[in-house]
Length: 491
Image 1: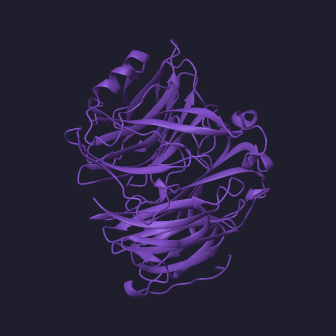
Image 2 (image 1 turned 180 degrees about the horizontal axis):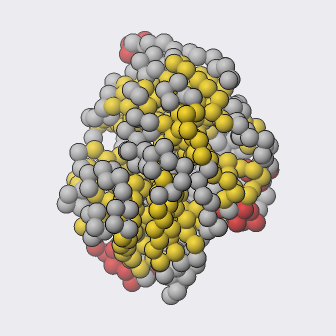
Image 3 (image 1 turned 90 degrees about the vertical axis):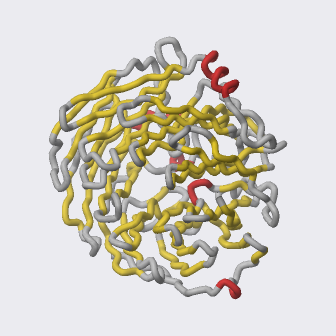
């Protein structure tokens, strides 16, 4: 068991916040931040996970009045925080170094959401193997805690932080050499552990439904295969497969461009959905969306080919709701998933086109428009909508924020205005019943630097408002070390 480095918690009254504050903006909220992630506990409370560059991370409880309720500091490198048994749980590597990456020893922290104190913590797994490991945390509605750790064939080292040609290591990165499932109780003790079957194909992903059933999917040549493991079962109950017409597929590369996705049905414990983007035999980008039903062993799927003429048609069909926002561009044949989820009987898939350019010897990803497809659970497409996006940054990849509430999909996006280091932000609200935009607002940058970009993964969503974290890197050399400013907005 590893002790917490420091646990700092305090209740801050709004008038005496120690941060510089103007209206709805809090400056200097954090410095030298590497990564941000948020988890919505309820309509009034979020927990923000902040990773720093010195082997330390913070968890911050923040309410919908933009008051910091508590801040707690820990040693290690965090992966994910999620709701669990009325509080939150965090999974983290015990240490991190720039040359070797994160360690393969994992600690779990069970945190009281009222004060940020550690209820309990425990070491849940350790390995002397130097290959890269990727833990995923699943808690359903907060009633269980499962961790799936995938190991690939790429060893930690200089290449793990991009210091040599990453393309030489893509195959090793995507190869899976080990899988382990851990189930934790509320004392963070491992009460069940097993190794799921490993397939020779490309790992699509894992999903866990609200009943605790595990689905693990693989892509073998032109076949998508899914294994189902019942709750507390260490052997698959069944395997289902579906053929798709793949020509070529771009492999996943680190946390950048995802071309595969897997999501469990919100209510039906026997259904799971997958999505794959690939180039078909005509060398056009194509989306394949499928459903597996383990009740009857049936599969169904639908495909959509994005030929150049179809991409142009989508651009022309866009009806703007804000004249200050440019029309969308959906021209590139390179595509990636931004968001895949099933909520209230609707399967939502958001993907985007992108292309790569070289700027001052750095390779930049420029995101074009986001395409949002809405399906019913029989995979009938109910709507298709574009959100104009044209974003890039010389320091880091920009992420969008997504949130669904009351059958409304909110998307927080950056857009580049004039130059690589000038950013605007927009919030689009899409009605999932009609497939039409309710509104698309440009966010004010008052009291926020024009060069700051929003970190979509760290947006804190509340019932009537949302807080956007803005990042301000200080130099190309320290691009991951950012000063954080918070801004609260109303829907």
